[in-house]
Length: 77
Picture 1 (cartoon, rainbow, N blue to C red):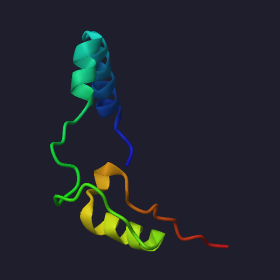
Picture 2: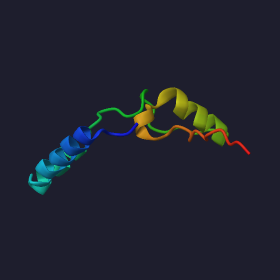
Picture 3: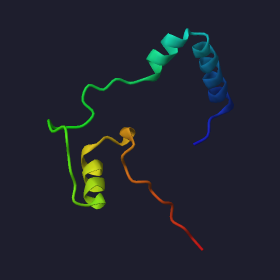
């Protein structure tokens, strides 16, 4: 999806406004705090195989945490 010229200009304006903020405020706004990233009470997990680990991640972790498999595009020859 590409931005329209108006969206691009609005985005650039917002970036310039944020750059005028003090560094501590920019850092505060740049991080998202999560009180509990992994469901369940266990602190340690062990898996017999990497496939088991990958399946557990896909089932239990949110995609925005970055533990999902990379989707390969269909290659055509």
